[in-house]
Length: 287
Image (tube, rainbow, N blue to C red; front, side, top):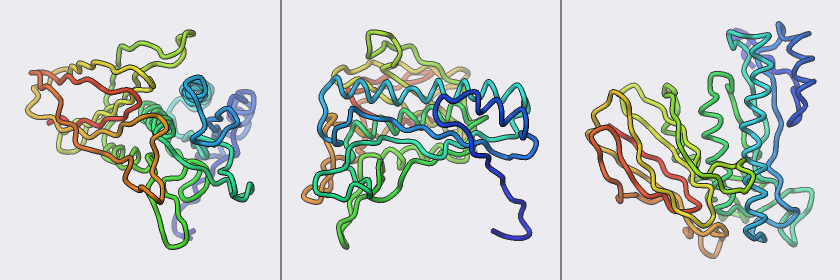
């Protein structure tokens, strides 16, 4: 805290879908807050991070994509009382919550992190990007050794999780301006609730466009053709994180999962096309 800086006041907001609480706070104390917190975890099926099948994976994706509904509906309530969007929606805790790893202290919430977790991370970050007019902050829980961490340690040893590499890719969106984007996609569930592809796009001060796309399908690739309005494309470079859904980094193999250059991309006059493998996150920078 610095005495010459104003305090940013964040009200203790809803847990997941408690829309009544958002309504109550916005109606009665909205004038006194700068931010409203939202607390929502992606729960699995009560198993450890690496113990899952395709059905468990689908449950995780459904629970993760719930964030789109939560941000939208809480945002709609906030819009009624704060149409200028002065108050930020602060997603103060999000991420996968698994059963702790065998042999660890249950109170320490230590869990592994696989490509499934990376897909959940990319899915959420794209959602936050697309709602960045209202979502002013979003904090994964937590950074090191707890829940969906970006790094795990063992004494003086450390490894980076697949989730870390998703954050590394998405950092190119920082300080950019959001671009409107839309994607036509199939769904990975019979109910049609979880899209196979989830995207966001932004433009930086140099005019470069950054697009991040997540393929949530555990089995199917997706052909993507991107068209950019009022733009002649000169070049496109891409980076991808992909692997079998259980793939993860361990202290025995720290580099089993990491980002790689993706060169199988075809330039078009007004965009690009590529085939995105299952269970993958890609970043494309277009000039």
